[in-house]
Length: 219
Image (cartoon, rainbow, N blue to C red; front, side, top):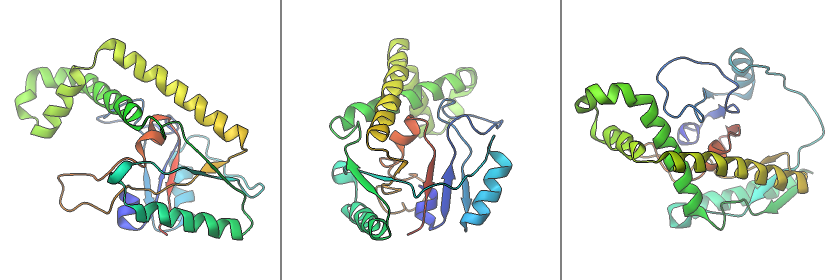
């Protein structure tokens, strides 16, 4: 999302492929991201921080184009742009496969799982600090931690189990149609003003939930 909003290249590796210290948000989702002006610089930076970085050249990849999702929160222009890019890739000789993704027909359910997982893990990370210093937290962060504290252990286990299901379904969809990667809008809206919001996360949260890598290209 930051890369899309700023017109630069953004890359987020597969979860678990980068090592880092510091205050976490949601440990099973956290990863280091890179923002660069060129693909060449991105490759050099990734080689420095991503474990086992070994880019390879192969046949032209087969591109998966998911059916649109996002209700009215997503600007239609984003999906129109992706359709144009897909047509350009097809004209250049790339194979394009269109199909539904698992959250197409159950968007609210999957979004609820992602939200509960993030907030529950955030509450666990902050548990010790929150007990002693909750009055020092900014209101929105306080509310986020409180939401996470309300997530039951059973619900947290469900979030993990359903994530495994999502990963399996995405792998099955890719395998059945020989998809090498998916394309979709990088963000569901234009860049927000000020610092009250980091923007609409509809386009990124499900891929992150599945622990998949993402790259954003300024087009």
